[in-house]
Length: 154
Image (cartoon, rainbow, N blue to C red; front, top):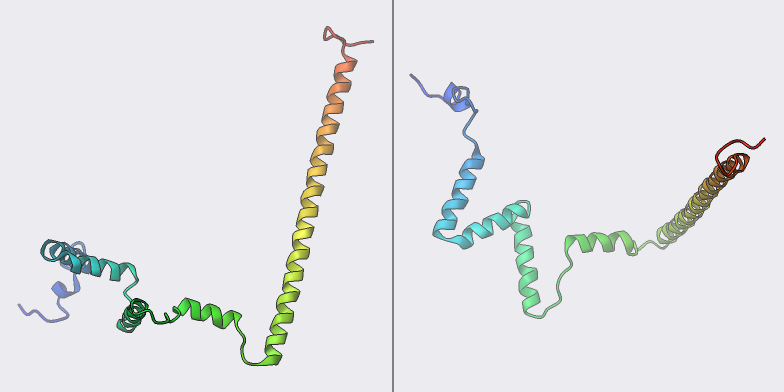
């Protein structure tokens, strides 16, 4: 019997549950590392929860942490850099003016839409009040038409 890389054993066809899951190896390694040296397991779980960041990202994170311990200026995170890029000046005066005009126009549209929404809500509330008043008046008219003893007045 020959065991080649295309055999049924390596493809997982022989095993009912498929190929041996890597997740069980990973969990076993975490358990073993907790038993022998727990800081390694904690570091691995933190790395896993961070989404398996690349080594360069981890190095940048470590350098930001070291520079903050030394009292140096802390470089911005990539989210802060993206926010600054989206809201800061582009370096082109014409584009910055265009962007400001468009944002002002969108803000004016947003305010107009909010005002229309408020006016519509007031209109719907007034319709509800009118319907309630109409139902109450119909009830009172019906009650007045009936006598105090519940019989119809003729």
